[in-house]
Image (cartoon, rainbow, N blue to C red; front, side, top):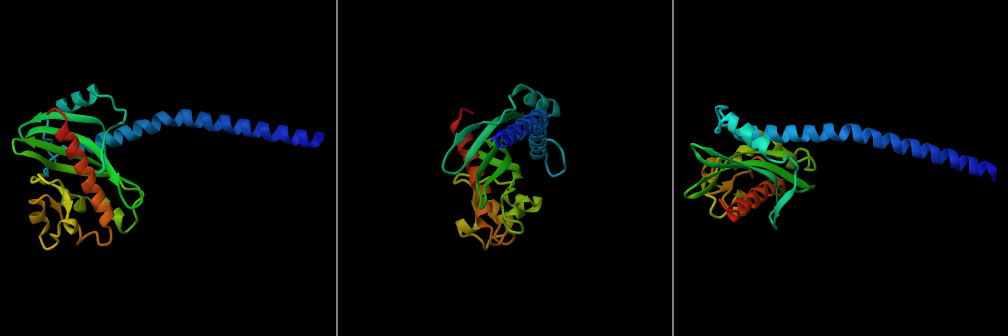
Length: 220
């Protein structure tokens, strides 16, 4: 009996020490992980605010001021059947119109697909200036994971005719159009570059549509 008690006490001590060690490691690393995530997010925000020549469409001091003013904690601020929208949301004035940068996600084949997008508000409505798919880690390699290719992401922008939201060509029955022609109708042609990965491409479109719904519903 004493041997059983002794063994039990030893195991309990080992478990306690291991638990304390794991807790210490978590406390040490959590802030660094959070900082890395914020830096990656801000990097994506900066990227979608650049034109094809690499020039910012808003002044850098305006960007830095906006970043400094908002809480960087990520929270769900809008959700519907299409997807979710997260804080923070950035708003800027520019020569192109009112500029908004925000993050949204929608369910892909394996899990959430997250998108950072830049929208421009004009008298005729919103347009997509640029976007970056920031998380597609659960999509199938060689299929849905192709959405990480910047050239494929460009199939979704620039896009202006968004009265009916964003669609992919298979859903809109417009696979016969070129990529540029499709974008003029609010359609991303991906069937020729993402064969067998419709769900992932549709998740990007749904995330964009959730962001559009959010922007259309708030006071702007």
